[in-house]
Image 1 (cartoon, protein in one colour):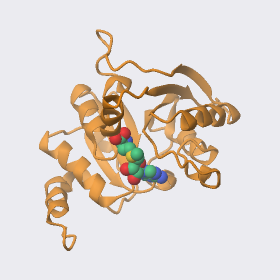
Image 2: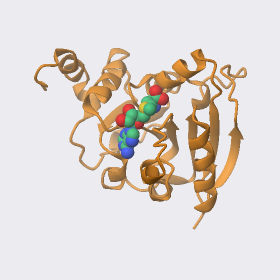
Image 3: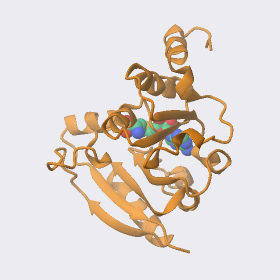
Image 4: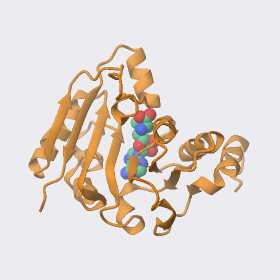
Length: 217
Ligand SMILES: C[S@@+](CC[C@H](N)C(=O)[O-])C[C@H]1O[C@@H](n2cnc3c(N)ncnc32)[C@H](O)[C@@H]1O
């Protein structure tokens, strides 16, 4: 596919064609049955986290969703360069997730450094708003959960409130997530650094982390 005036993006798209859906149709998950579980990263950006996770966890299949073509083209090209066979990318807004993914497909949903939308009138765009939590609840398997990492304390506190209000159980929270994984836990998402995380850690900023699961009913 050619995007006029941007040869770099065209090259990323050409490289990653097999791993990327630009006009997603309902996902066909038949070739994922041999994997232990499926996980989803929402707002995967340029894909450093997803590629690291897919490399480190070859028995898990990872889906990345991202709104913008030039960004997701890089994410998919990175996975293609690494010859990953357990990663796939969808250019879409997560608002439409239930038209693409079946219910109860995912064991973990990752929200990494989501846009904070600081103005109050924009709260509904925050990816932990009740309208998104309702979608995640449907996408998650009964034993599944969401993991969130952010540098933004306001978004973190607001997300805790939104989760409690929607009846989710916060299983863990950490207001200064260590950058070093304990031995044996290196492959967990909380210890794999995203592009934004690398930047914020470089500035010495604390990273906030939480894990939460939806109510049963
Ligand atoms: C601040 S960036 C973080 C990127 C990456 N997760 C990281 O930590 O480096 C947030 C990303 O989420 C994407 N995004 C925001 N809202 C989204 C939505 N509703 N659906 C899909 N992607 C979204 C944005 O386009 C952006 O690339």
